[in-house]
Length: 182
Image (cartoon, rainbow, N blue to C red):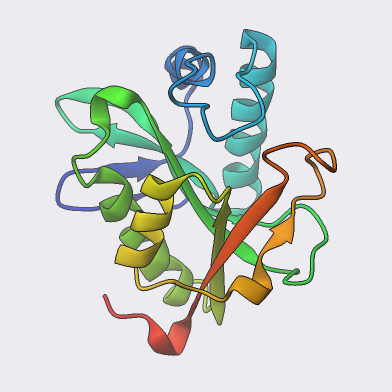
């Protein structure tokens, strides 16, 4: 299974001891502000289990993020095959979620750059996408720092969010391999 390293971070496969801090993140209204709801412990454990299994099965996914010598788990970042149908699928998305104590320190961008390098390098992907709700300006800022671009015509209603829900509408950012600058 692939492990990636940056100057400050390790992007690694999930361990069982990651489930508890992930559950705390998933229950935190600040962390889940741009998602339809927080998660119960059972829901969070199910998500973490799926993320762990995907990495074990395909060698990549949303890796657990570790700050070596400082914090064994601060969130996740990485690449996943988009698991729903939309006008831009099939596709691989890049995503991240960090505990609030680790926000605004550049960790999401740093981890995402490593994931992009792996996706365009070792995995040979032609394009990577990312999406969020319009109100999630911090994540959109990360997407822009990564060199991803948005075309409003690509915005979409997320098929897993009920129609009419305030978080149904999503913005889509894209980055093609030929436009990637490490």
